[in-house]
Amino acid sequence: MPAFTATAPGKIILLGEHAVVYGRPAIAAPVNQVRARAVISAAPRRPSGEVLIQAPDIGLESRLADLPGDHPLACAVNGVFAELGISRPLACTIRITSTIPVASGMGSGAAVSVAFIRALSAFLGQVLSDERVSTLAFEVEKIHHGTPSGIDNTVITYNLPVYFVRGKAIQTLRLSKPFTLVIGDTGVASSTAIAVGEVRRRWQASTAQYEAIFDQVGRTVDFARNAIEVGWLDELGLRMDENHNLLRLMGVSSPELEQLVQAARAAGALGAKLSGGGRGGNMIALATEASAPAIAQALSSSGAVRTITTTIQP
Image (cartoon, rainbow, N blue to C red):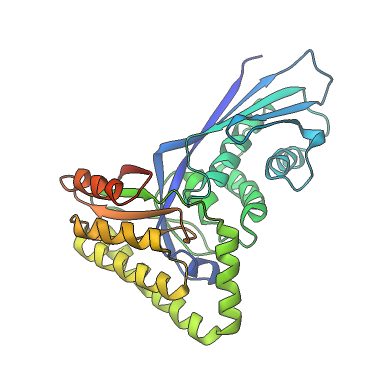
């Protein structure tokens, strides 16, 4: 029996993080330069139903039966089994690898789940629709992030730039022309669950203040969507700067992020902001094709442990 392989891209949030948890819109796009990969192969010499999971990037090798039920990988496997009505699968080995930085706002957990779910359902002979893959991955996201918005599993599953509002139908963005982003990684690991939880506590303590901030974010996202769809990159850059200032008001920036954002702007970025949960992780800079190398160099010189240049295509 052949091995079954599936991959899934990373993602970056262009605008709208945190506010998206509270019903405001966000825009996100896939980053195909980094990917998660799941390879599933039959193990006919092992006992029927035994599933061995290997994730060398995190030093994990375990039988499914030995993982706690709330482990994200166990949740993903058991979710597929339940979806397909399978109680005792063929013995198999599932190997997961990823080039997506962990705890950096690039959707590492969701990408692993999507690749995992697709490979496993194909191995079991029942390929799942994108909608079902995204739904199952969202259940795993709840373990990773507590109260996720659903944007990570959505943009990664569909591998398209999306305008996302929690609980509403997905809207694919219509880009009039491509644009370039330079991603700068602070090297500071940051838990999205913790960052989201901290914003929630502040929202509970100062609800009116935070609702007003979230409303401003929503308006900024809608202006940015229009800019993307008509190709006004200068306007998009301004809206990214505006969104970053609102994220600072939420308290989710950090000295490392601020240093990289300022370095990108000084090197000619049209706009720059943190991306994802904040408190570390990644920032993004809107660049022209010509300015991208200089911005990447400026980020590296200012402390970025890695940079990725990606073009978002129509």
